[in-house]
Image 1 (cartoon, rainbow, N blue to C red):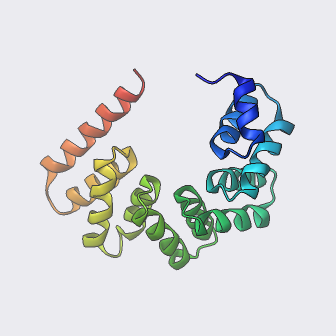
Image 2 (cartoon, rainbow, N blue to C red):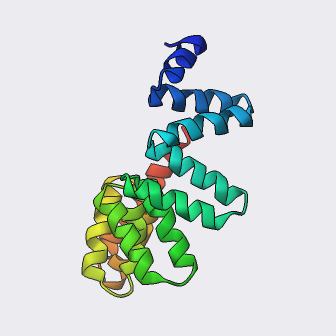
Length: 178
């Protein structure tokens, strides 16, 4: 366990992981100025996590343009959460093609939120491909993917598998509250 002074020293020396741990520490302490300072320092060193979090903060401050710019930068660095966020905001603009592109990138990078959301987006147009993404999301224990896949199973007449998925969803949700 690193003490705060050790983290501070490492972060001052340019260690991004230490900077992000200080972000967590200062977030818990409600020290917003320090949170922003360390996020910006880590972002200057191309930390996709820090850039993504700055994008989230920009969105929280109703600055969507800045959020999209930051998420685009983080996505270019491989950040799956930013890919998901960019997809979601494209979807909110009714640009399903762009949303699909971002979620496909996120899903291919292993982003479980993108897996489930891409599967749900495709469920009404390409059930074969939708199932592929949804099954991967089910393997990752994403409850919403279990619901969407069960709907497809009901439509195809496989009520037993649909019920199994819904039972699995309930078990997944119950185990997360223990």
